[in-house]
Length: 321
Image (cartoon, rainbow, N blue to C red):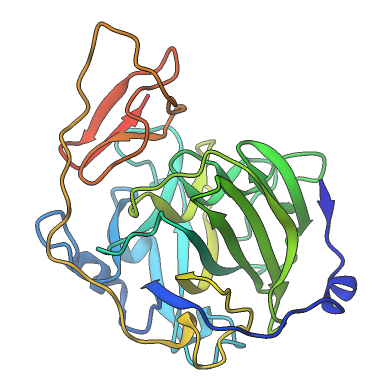
């Protein structure tokens, strides 16, 4: 486990080096919550897939505003507030979820990539540290942030395959900037971090992990494991994925956070839904609630015992339950 000292890390800060943006999750092109509703499985447009949420109107879960972004990102016109509450149960699940997924034709799962985002909470509708939260995760959970876990549940905790590697107090009103350093070729993941306008520094060197993605299973948002009526607001900004070298500057006008160009598509690559078999399938298995099939899915299609692969939104999304 690593403890964070921003003052110490600042002495080792690297200069900003712009990589190649493969997918831009800027909210500049989203003027209101209704813009997210333009996306559907039949009309896959915009930067995000929007289907993992509760039964209330989109405006209960998503809001965009210039006041919701990291002020250091001067090239980004707005950020997003994502809310989870007692209505946020998706597809009958007992957990509560409000999540966005990249809509893109780009390959976000090859080579050495950097998944960038900034996250903040305010004193209003603050996260409840007595409940586990999963934040900005892949379906297989090989890398993710968590809140409400461990010996200090008020910390943001970075996990690799369920093991804590780093943590920091999740103080209200502070923007926390992150980049998941994922080497899909080598099967390793590391973490870059900073606060406010400070450049990213590497806080955890790459460690081994079962890295995989189908380019549409990274979740920007929050999953709260325990159903609760309490509303929580989470703020996100500066979202993009790039190939190396990593951009360490926060919103300097030439990085992914500052670009208004988005990668979109009107169709998605398809794969056959998972099939059942009477033989044992070799290779990795998916954990509970992880994706196990659907359009474009190239990860594990066999669920760990005793879970089975269930059609949640056939033929687009199957999940181990």
